[in-house]
Figure (cartoon, one colour):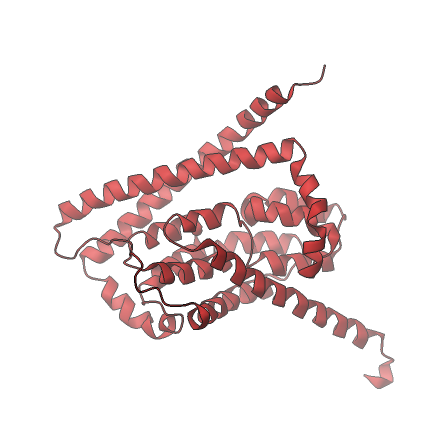
Length: 317
C-alpha cells in the first residue's frame, strides 16, 4: 500500500534530522572558537594592527582592514565562520552587504574546489575565478552602492570593558547567534527535503529552463543548478558528482555550470544567514547573478574560439 503524504513527510523529516543535527553541532563548535578568538584579538589590541596592514586593499571595496578577518575565515572555512567574525565587528549595513557578497563568492574554497574538480572543472581556474570575482564584486559594489549613513551598526565590545565583561557579552551574543542559525538550518533542511520528496524540485527544474538559457546554461543542468542553489556545493556534492559521473551531462556543460554556481550558489541558506546579520538580500543576489552571467558567456566565447581554431586547417593556424 502506498504511503500517505503525511507519512512520507514524517519519514523524510526523520531521515534528514541526524545529518542536520551533526551540521548544527559542528556549527556551534566553529562559531564558538571563531568568536572567542576574535574576542581575544580585540582584548589584546591586535585588531588595529591587522586593520592597518590590510586597509589599503579592503579600502578599495569601501571596507575597513578588520573586515579581512571575516573574508579570510569564510574563504578557508565557510559562511558560518565568516558570520561569527562579522558579528564581532562594528560594520554598517552597507559594509556588511559588500563583505557578505565577497564572502558568498569565495567561501569554503578548499572543499568546494574539490567538488568542482571532481565534476570536471580545473581546480586552479575555479580558485582564480572565484577569488578574483569576489574582489571585483566588492570593488563594483563600492562604486555603485549608495551610502547608508543612517544605518544602525552591529555593536562591538568596547575596548574599555574588562575581560570578564567582554566574555559575558560574548557569551550571550554568541548564544543568540547560534540559536538563530541552528533554527534556520533545521527549517531549511526540512523544507529542502520535503521539496525533493514530493517532486517539487524536479518540477522547478523544468520551470527554470528559460531562465538558465539567459544565464547561458544548458537545459540539462537545470536540476544541478537547483541543487547548488538549495543545498550548496558542499552539501550537494554527492548529487552533483553522481550526475556528472553518470554521463548525463557533458564536461563542457558542467564547466559552464561550475563557472555560474562558483560565485552564485546556496542562494537560500547562505543568503538568509548573512542577511540575519544585516546584509541586504537583493544586492547579494543581483550582483552575483550579474557576474555569473558574464563569466558563463565569457567561457562560451572561449569555447567557441577554441573549437573554431581546432577546425582550421593546420597550414592556416
